[in-house]
Length: 450
Image (cartoon, rainbow, N blue to C red; front, top):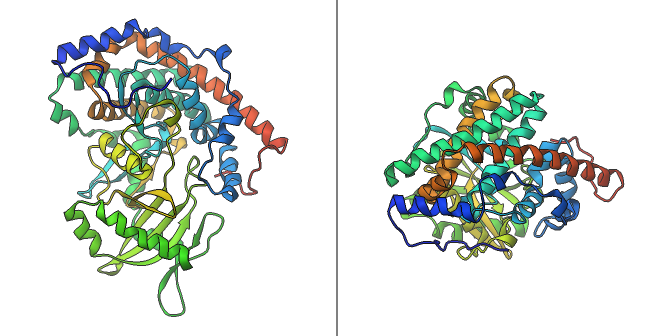
């Protein structure tokens, strides 16, 4: 059954009243109920759900998506958010809503340059963002920690301890946010990333990742001395003709959604060339354009990503009464969750499709699963809990969530139990996926899984 999008269950009251309301939600769904997966009630066919979630995608790129998903159970999990959305929707939930990241997993954490140029670490992918029950994000992130730990060859006890640390951090942070002034929570930044190995590695990667690096990798100089995107199929190629004209024309619509001061900065750049880039795992098949701009000469490049957005995988189960434009849904969801977002974040539309617009490769760094050995997984999990709680506190009501979670001990055990069970189910679904590939029911590309 769909849940209400943005209708508050009570009139805005005092912090104590909102906390009591959150606590009262335990009468509808107990905290221990969050451990339930109810496999016997699972009527869905996971492979059919996966194959049905391809609306708007380029059919010729789907074999590449499935190839990337085939590399491991965790890679499959990353590309199969539609399956987990269907599973979460059939289970009881708190109906305490926040802006969900939607695809919360450890490799959707990363570092990037804030508007002031400083490097920050945060959630960095919002394609599935939507307003919904807070615990859906928490359950997906906790499951990803278990799966990432398995891929990193961590012991079972280590994986479980990391998942517990994540949920504990989420509950502890939410309790702290419920006590703080509201605007202080909205501005909250985390400052201890440098001491945590996986995050330190991502920040170091961000320091090294500059727009000029992208120039060297994807561009060449033609016979007239002009810079043009090179052909790097199957991952990247140049776009020309009417398609390129349509992409560039869409920038007028994008420009209108920018605030005046950001529109002024955008106007100082001139477009040079258009490319097409295949990105990620879950996003493969969606149209993803890259536009090269120049500001004050060739050494002042700007890359804008114009990324097709379709409805969130959670849309069939949640009433999204706010967003009709899917690029706008993603941009506004990102702004709701992050205290510092891309300076040029916006949206556009062309060819009957809706797109998110953002900067590409502006000092971005990601999580390498190899850094999750030893204490790396648990350390990352603690920060993930604080980041997710901060995003939920900014976009929902921390007092209500705090009232529901209470001391945290029951919800920590319940969600960790759920994550372990769901990781097992993901591995079983992955086995069915691999069998479907073997039986030629699913076609994969001939490239090595990335």
